Amino acid sequence: MKTDLFFYTGTGNSLWTARMLATELGDAETVPISRTSGAPIVSGAEAIGIIFPVHIWGLPRRVIAFVDALENNPSRYHFAVAVNAGQVAATLIQLKKRMEAGGLSLSTGFELAMPSNYIPWGGPGPQEAQNRRFEAARNKIGRIAAAAAAREKRPVEKGPLWQNIIFTGFNRIAFSRVPTMDKSFWVDEKCDGCGICKAVCPSGNIDLPGEKPAWLHHCEQCLACIQWCPQEAIQFGKKTPRYKRYHHPEVTLKEILAVTPTR
Ligand code: SF4
Ligand code: SF4
Image 1 (cartoon, rainbow, N blue to C red):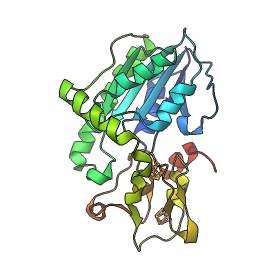
Image 2 (image 1 turned 90 degrees about the vertical axis):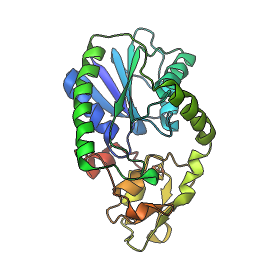
Image 3 (image 1 turned 60 degrees about the vertical axis):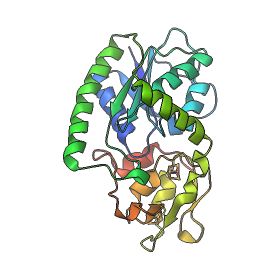
């Protein structure tokens, strides 16, 4: 019973989740959404998992484009995992509605809390708290795999009502502004022109004129560029010089480069 696990990742949380799920499920393949193109996106698997990070309490633009392009196969089982920093809000409801609008069904969806990579609002938190989240995530991934293997159908998980109302409202306001939020990125004197920021960007949003990055205003706010810069030379606004960088500790730069679109 083959499962394709489509994942979208910037700093490795969703890549790691997809990899863990594949191990638990057995007959499963991980497929980076960033390397899918065209429409329809076809899969020969009997089940599809969609694993993605929650961006500003909603779906990343690239994930929306992916589900809109996914081939409609009514007999296939679909489930989703929304990786978040503790506030999934109504993201999985948004996904379910989007898929249903395209004739696809979402049988169930799970939220999975991981350390935050959204450095404009702070670092990932103390190591002990991160470790607790990793451990809880490992346990939950086991339960998600069991539910997916049993083809369970149940309501998607969601945050409390206040979160769904307030944060979904914020998401609606912010969504159109996300592509130009990269105006707050800047680079300090530590930049050595290595080009890693450009290479890890899943949306091709970075150029390197004069060997310093320039952001092109079709940003996804995945934070891969700032988190993977080996010199910690990229900043966002005024506060990030003092915030700790984060990527999933079991995901390497090489693995991220292997799932980023080649240009
Ligand atoms: S990854 Fe960092 S050091 Fe390398 S070019 Fe980009 S900003 Fe400069
Ligand atoms: S510019 Fe940075 S934050 Fe924006 S999509 Fe690219 S890697 Fe992600």
